[in-house]
Image 1: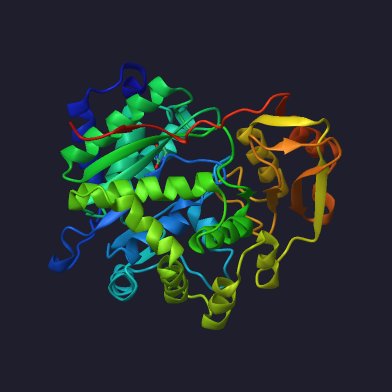
Image 2 (image 1 turned 90 degrees about the vertical axis):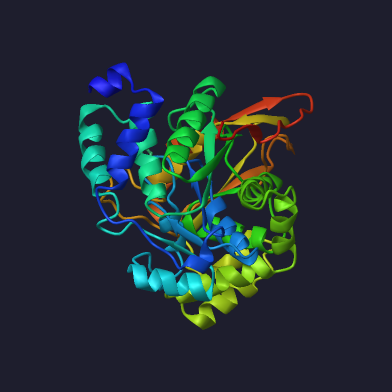
Length: 405
Ligand code: URA
């Protein structure tokens, strides 16, 4: 509580982070992987499926990616929940299995083992019930202790800034958070770079677990929404450049998306983590010109409903926090940590910020179970949109970068 009220300086934050990291196991890797071990962390967004694309893309660039991810809680979706839309995919990997997959494929995306930073589990539970979660030093120590325990050489942090961001709703708070994370990571010997990226509108067009897997495959096929691809290229590019001292990282990542190497790594990773080979081939073989192709392979919700634009104009903003909360009610996420997730539900946006829509035209498809969608939810979704009469330019998704000083 004292830390929450008074804060900690950078040195104190680093000391706390190190103590937390050392409270349990740390991972170790073969010597020959030195200089290639990388990971990414996002402070949590709506429709944020970047990890599903970035891990295989980095592996296709020759990196080793032991990505330990989390589950969704509240309005933010979880990478592990998204991947569990694929039948058979297991997120529980003992460390020898993790190492074998890293040897064979180059990347894995799994959950935290019981003894990785046990202090964080205890502290987080206490913070949760004492209202001390949004404390910059405590958030920093919690995030970086877990990433530092992976013993990677470089880390990229996606610090979300905007109305749907956890902690940093404005640029000043975003920069403070980015600086704090980068400093603590450097003190523990992991080279970190943070990108501050906009989190006002949903990322890409899909929100909901299976839908986000589908959109990830679309991006891995070199297709799909531009904002998602930009995030993947920028975050991956940063990592590669920070390790290799080059400025070709973005291009290297882009090439793996366009020539199918990243998709092949994704396919190999999901098979290595338990997906049936035949199913993985069918899923990754879909051309993905349309997201709905995914329902040929993965389970679809009972119903779909489209909402129509209430007026003609350009969409000037879409409140992603509210869209995410509606998805939570549909069952796509969990309001409490122990709840089950329905992988088949979610929303697909047919129009995005900057799009022109005509009154009566569909702008969103909702995939839901029979009884779960009602007029109240439809009204909430309609209210997420703001319209403008004139065209507008959509600002760049990357706002700034923080590097170690
Ligand atoms: N994510 C974490 O891992 N820890 C926090 O404290 C907040 C977000």
